[in-house]
Length: 274
Image 1: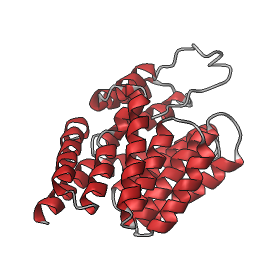
Image 2: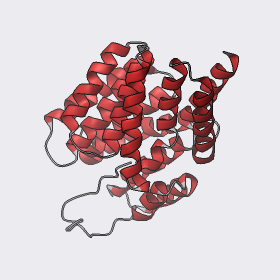
Image 3: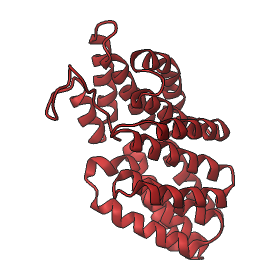
């Protein structure tokens, strides 16, 4: 996950230290419980009005969700959003990132129509903005929108949005990875499994080229997309092996209650009952 840095008189250079550097490093290393504790400590140590306090609370909420405690993460975002708006302004990238992260937590809780509406609103607001962070906010919000629409069964619409977002994003980074995975899911949802498998394999190639800290949050996601395509193609044994690999990886990385671990378990059960 991309953690934005404050810019201005308190951050005057690319190498300027941030009190959240350690929390961000722990998160990037997949040490989510430690990242949560560190971010909470930073938030508690800041003076009233210090903009690092809402940033730290955002990292803590993100790390909470990464441990599968999605309802708790949503409550944290609900409490954080007014503080982020007060600190930065409603259309600042920091505030929009909180909204985007909150919207994707809604999806993790199965509240897809709410997530869709919020992701769409965030993407529009970010597209109006300027600055180097705004394209990342747009890409994140579009990814959440694609997921939420697909989860409601509107797979052709999700496909069109994914293709548009991939073309607009342009970079070969984590956002390109998640957008390609969204495209693969939409194709699987339309029973276009050969195309889905090809897209999942492209995502796998990109996944392998990314630094570890950029790909760790997507643990298990590529294997799940591949497994879904293989199952649709009637290659059940291969599908089960990939789904089991995804489940084991997600269980180790995120715990049993994370939405991707649950998704992998459900796919395994579906394969075993077929």
